Image 1: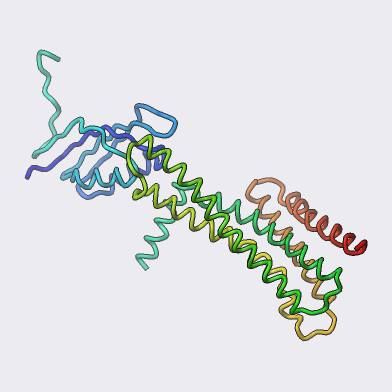
Image 2 (image 1 turned 90 degrees about the vertical axis):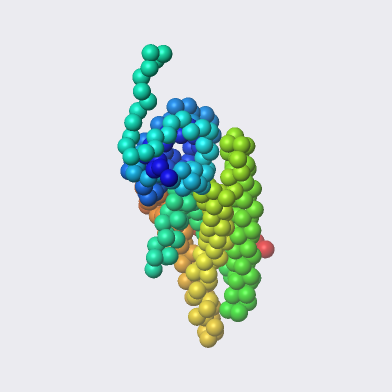
Length: 95
Length: 198
């Protein structure tokens, strides 16, 4: 089975645990090399966070379980890169 | 050893999530203060009534301490669990998921447990410290020294609590110490005059 090398997730989470804690625990998962989390919308009790994870072999199950354990929910999987290397989406005429 | 380290690490995480140490600290200071003042009342009641039996002072003091401990434990458990449940339910409603079995839910349950223990034990322990001279007074004829030592110990405990509060507020510790001792002195003086007039 191909290895997932990049995941971009749209999530909703409570303010606590904060994104520093979330980034810390996600980066400790095996197969994960780096994590980037940015908040793009803030409400009174919750916030929307875009989570980008890169690594050699990311386990989506572990990632989603951890996010849920931290009180968050995954709204959508916005980008996945799998295979031997990371590639970005190719530019087309429509772009 | 590893499981102990893991437990400490979980506790730290729960503390951060549920703000446990700050609330427990508040409960500790407030209830230890209550405990000492209540025992001052018990001691003064016995003193002005002329009770000269260490056993009677200890049994009234200990039963009062146990009642305070149970009151603290039950009260904190019920109020904290009600407050925490409401907070968790509110976030769960916004998130559209049940957060009971997440780190937030577990931190919330740990907070209820720890805060209830602190709330129950702080007045109980503070009262026990004040009653200490009466545990040693069984063999003596005159208990006047035990009363005065206990009252002195009560004022010292109040002063220490004041220093603790001053340390937390990063204010002038001595001022906090004097304020808490003053409460004890006021309580002793009023009880004394009530006893004299009665």
